[in-house]
Length: 146
Image (cartoon, rainbow, N blue to C red; front, side):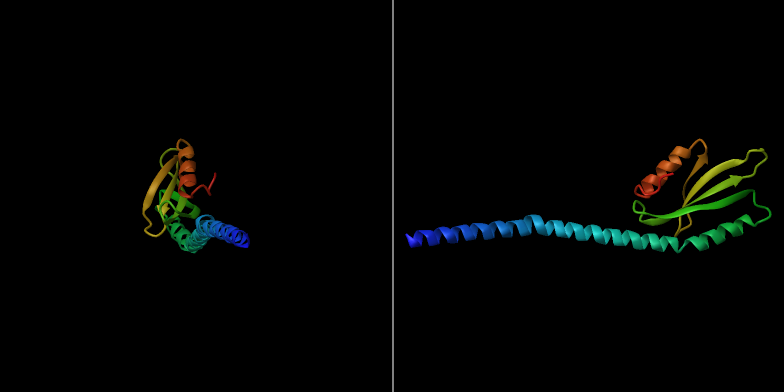
């Protein structure tokens, strides 16, 4: 009879240990790894945002230099810079007023890759204002809302 109880206790202990091992490897450990992965991704994105912010002064100086040209037909203003996970690059936006023969002038938003200084796209204002807002929202991974 004592052997029977001992066997039952050992069987219960093995089942409990098996459940504990199953929980640890199948449920707990993947959750911990997922959380670490999210933290690493957030730290990576934060460092990229900081790197982008460091480019702001040089971009503004370049724009000001172009604006100071007495023969310039447009005035451009720096709007913002942000890290785009979609492009894995720093992107900045400017607002340009082109002074042409018309009294109103043309208003346009330009979006550039900060590293290459190449134009990604542009949007006429006011006709493409919503497209511009959608672009910023999409490329900033939902962080920029105008």
